[in-house]
Image (cartoon, rainbow, N blue to C red):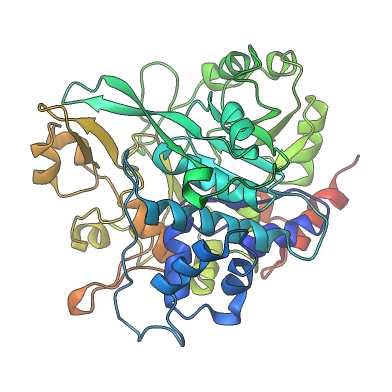
Length: 459
């Protein structure tokens, strides 16, 4: 549940019940920076940063972003370094520290297990983000939205504080073809010394097909420690249908038998797996176990609980309209279908979308591309149309694209304020199967979700 919905409070609340609590690792650099600018209510982030193993790095981050008492209402947040192939020391330090802090707080005061979830699509942030989580002792790393073939090796390297690198896809001008570049983090160069070795977290690859599971499991270099098999009804991004994309009358992608993972073939890899997307109920757990899964991954039920990072007013509105979620094939700049919840006042409404000035000032979903002169540029289908076209792509690719970065930050109360009093509108997402609401109180907790599923299942 990206961009702060599954934050440290929620992950910790799940972990203390004996389950795996997972924090979202998406855009933690900007969420930490903005919360520090709000004065760090409760002092939690400063407490986490006081435990960072290289104090001078944490102190630089605090000096750059912390505002005692918080900035005045309506004052724009200070920007953070944007992701790029070359990176920057300030950006790497912020990303490492932010991921450390989130995992540290999620693990604080209990012995439960904590994981962190990343998107393969956001390759430029991955090495630094993963390293920060490893420094905090994260137990599991999960990754979807792509083919995470290089993560097992990255975890091996970063646990030993070796230079960790992964490939980064760079589009070749306007052709759409990709050349291989790399992005990485060198812990010794970043800190000026080598720290003691750390435990290597386990890695779970989030996939939607048995074919991809078999591909990843084929060799030790790419083999994860298990899989999360996700169906198309899960919230957020989902894999597009296999083959030619067909839309139904509502304009949503049509999924068919080819999109159903063969769980027997997943089991044949010899690796454990969990099922996600429509399984967050007692009956869903029973079905998963009967199919050979170790258990289930639950998202939407936790997104609507008290410990969720969603703005509390938006969370209540989202619960009332939980059945109104559209799998929008155009909303995400990534080109992947994205679940958009129809909540008044959000980017789900056409008039709100059209009133928002098109801009891309965060850039987590930007695509690097090679210019004619060989230099690297960056483009996003949610940026101004004329700007996108000048970067070699057709205007048609911008139709309907939402700025997920700004919209999802607004959904957790960290939306940017613009000159003239304009505030970023939120964007909300949720899974399309709402059966998880049956039996849960209106204002439920994370512990209520766990108890409801475990006690209701006939195991």
